[in-house]
Amino acid sequence: MVPLNWYIGLSAIIFTIGVIGFLIRRNIMIMLISVELMLNSVNISLVAFSHYLQDMRGQILVLFIITVAAAEAAIGLAILVSLYRNKAVLHTDEIMEMKG
Image: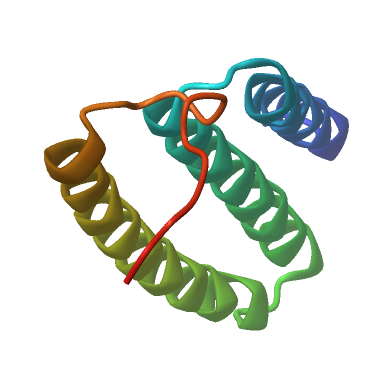
């Protein structure tokens, strides 16, 4: 059996990679992927704690987080496609303003 510390360490490493990717990279697509990495690292820790404590509430919460992540990805990609069609840029430095 794998100890709980390994799951929490893996979750911390993945969350750190997501934060660094979000803060350093200026590509919108990479920023969306980094947010997904952060959400999935939280899911790993929730499932690990849920299994460790023998409680199903953490695993149920993971299902809600996955649903929110799917909605966030769909809306984010729709905004990304719309932005690319209008301005043909994907870097946040080149986007000056967003008009409706």
